[in-house]
Amino acid sequence: MKPADISTKIFLDSGDPKETEVVKSVLGWLDGQTTNPTLLARNPAVKQMAENQALSEAELEDAYRQIIERINKLIPGGDISIEVYADAFTPAEQMVDQSRRFAKWADNPYIKLPITSAGIEAAQQLLQDGIKVNMTLCFSQEQAAAVYTATAGLSGGNIFISPFVGRLDDRGVDGLSLVFNIQKMLKDTDGHLQVLAASIRSVEHLSILLETQVDAVTVPAKVLLEWDKAGRPIGTTRRKANLTPLPYQEFDLRSEWKSFNINHSLTDIGLEKFAADWQSLIVAKN
Ligand code: E4P
Image (cartoon, rainbow, N blue to C red):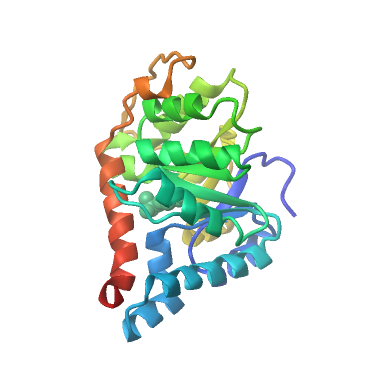
């Protein structure tokens, strides 16, 4: 059972249902799970299949479906994020086609789309059809502003935005400050966009995010098990001081989404890596 003092949704960040089973039995609950092409490529069964013989695109998609269906059985009704295959050139229509198939795999699916122009256009189409989305690879407050305005009026709170904490920390930038800035920007808004802190590396990240009551956080199994071992701290650990915080920026959230600059080098790098990990499994047969 989830403790009453935790309002944040806690998701497992993993492509392996075995981890879902372990973490759920240790914690006693999970609110959902997030997956991505890198995590899919790390799934032991997928890895084994691809090592024996590279998969066709249809076989890979089928393997992904089976994984999501197993996760769905372990967390019935949980928020389950399924990421489309996309690179910098993938058009919105292609993302929408994949999403319509992927959205059938779980009771409560969130389709993960990159924050590119095509990804945002795909999100608008999907939301109009009642399909929930998780906008991923967020590295700037301005990207969050664009997603907010692009999706205003399209759904009743069915949208996550995923700021990537650890990948900013890796560059010496305080990833948590991005989450706080987005939370602040969205504070007095209609609530249609929810913050899902991603790329979590430590118990410290998790405990601070729980204290600030971020809407949701997705966490690798290792960190969740360490958090449990440490007595499930909430805001009781201190942050490292050697990271540069991002300044808060004022944006007019009534502006047209295309007026915002959604470019970020880490989004480009992340997109390339996800695409490469997906392609590494299928290269030989296609
Ligand atoms: C989840 O939605 C993200 O894809 C994931 O948290 C990224 O984590 P990483 O930066 O450790 O790859």
